[in-house]
Amino acid sequence: MLKRHDTAVLVSPIATDLPKIENADWIGVDFGFEVLLKHDIKPYFVIGDFDSKEEDIQVDCPVFKHPTHKDETDMELALMKVKDMGYEQIYICGALGKRLDHTLANLRILGWQYPNAIALDQNTRIRVLTKGKYVFQAEYTHVSFFALEKTCISLDGFEYELDKRWIDVQDIYTCSNSIPNDHACVTIHEGRVISVETNFR
Image (cartoon, rainbow, N blue to C red; front, side, top):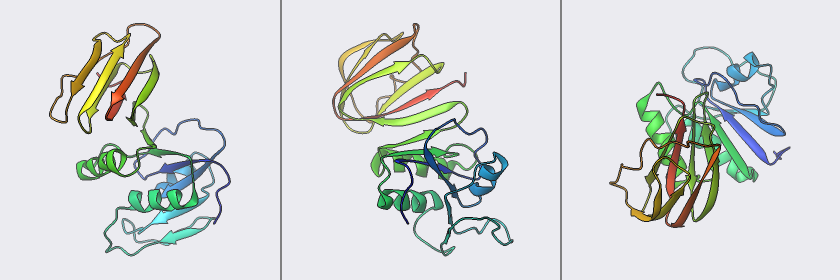
């Protein structure tokens, strides 16, 4: 199966509001295809074990059905599939909330397996930042950074700024920052962090 676009959007069953993403292949993870259909989006394909409901899968697209007893979560199966297909950008909708174990699994997937994927919901964006400079627009109320390894970070234009500060995995004082103006800059000099932007107060 060939990709149609360079961007894949994976939608789980707990996704609600979907982002506006142009030129993307929308993929239903397990019964996430029902969320897509409710938003009048035809899935490019669906993938999962489909064990949460005892009903036939009614969808007009390819279905990749996996056994219930497996080592991977449905989201991990979807990520493996889109990686093999060569997608350059991956968005995950419905990766956060409800089951804490699944939320933690999805965060670990972002941090250690698929750092180019971005988790989105109606109030939150989570992504991995590696060495480089990033411009953050003031789109979210709070911005937090958590080291995935020993990291040297600078924060310019934030309410709480840092200049080449080393942080490690046990540090949490980089939680709950904000952008007082229209944008701010993050520089990762060494290492990598997971950034969490949210509108929850």
